[in-house]
Amino acid sequence: MSAIKLSDCVSRIKESPTLSITAKAARYKSEGKDIISLAAGEPDFDTPQHIKDAAKKAIDNGFTKYTPVSGTPSLKQAIIDKFKRDNNLEYSLNEVIVGVGGKQCIFNFCLAVLNSEDEVIIPTPYWVSYADIVLVSNARPVIVQCGIEQKFKMTAPQLEKVITKKTKLLMLNSPSNPTGAIYTKEELQSLSQVLIKYPNILIGTDDMYEHVKLKDMPFYNILNIEPTLKDRCVIINGVSKAYSMTGWRIGFAAGPSYIINAMEILQSQSTSNPTSISQVAAEAALSGNQACMKPMITAFRERHAYVVKSFNEIPGLSCIEAQGAFYAFPYAKKAIDLLFDQKILKEKTDLALADYLLEKEGVAVVPGSAFGSEDYFRISFATSMENLAEAMKRIKRALSV
Image 1 (tube, rainbow, N blue to C red):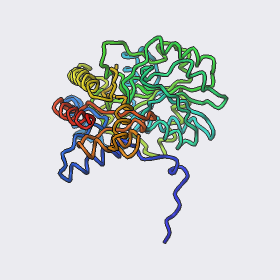
Image 2: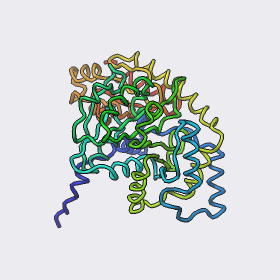
Image 3: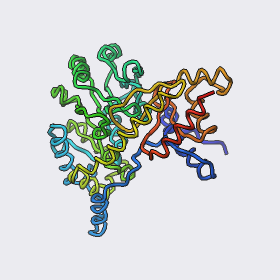
């Protein structure tokens, strides 16, 4: 029997590179190989105890049934309170939705607003799923290259240059995955002045790493700078990173009620409600003592300083400091060129470099091309200092040829 032709939709996209590399590293490890994985983007800390206790109590109380599709009213209220407390933004219950992770919220947002031939502006380096989600939505990603020389942030002239009559959406991510870049107040002001001139462009802001700040600097959402954009802006956030709750799968979005309602319709026909127990845990996270984040962020700051210094001491690499998240994104073109010239790499690509580091030294990193930026690679420093020290030693050995 011949294979049945798969859908055009699935043929447009690829497997998540981070998940693929993480799975490959895990397979090698299960085979007994000495592997240090710096690929996965999740904190290595446990979920705070008061959050776990809330989940246990929910189970004991029998809170294990369906909930409203868009989330429990009490969790949605906790999200509203969070936006007011942390961001000075006001939303109503019908302007908030809870999803199965931030990824589902972005997925539903794009499916709710995008049509064939719509264009979505995505500054690169971008989170690996943005472009593919746009492609699933039958729209076209418009990639704007923002390299290390401009600190991985899109400028207002770059934004205006790529706007066309087909532009429907701009996706912003600050703090950024994979670079840790944070847009300043002045940078968001410049972008907002462009957007004001184009009232038909929606804005999606992915603030998932809002609280994971590596520098003592304020966090701004574009709505803090230009409130008039609120009627066409959807904010995506969640509990995964700040509270070390990746496996609980709770994200949320806030925006105009007609868009949120459309996202709820889509969700009602896919996953339906997020897990009831996880919703209780997320409510405890958002409503509880926020000091639980401090030990994790303190550790991330120490690790960040160490890996940036280490990378800049390795021949062929250049790494600038991040402002948020828990990633480093070194520029590796010189190292790639050198290894290729010496016939160590078969191809002059970041993919070949990532394969070389995994096969030769047992260090798993994510190639920059997965994020739309060739000649870079991403590491997560959400692992122990012991692992990082060993990984840096191995990477230096691999590149010192």
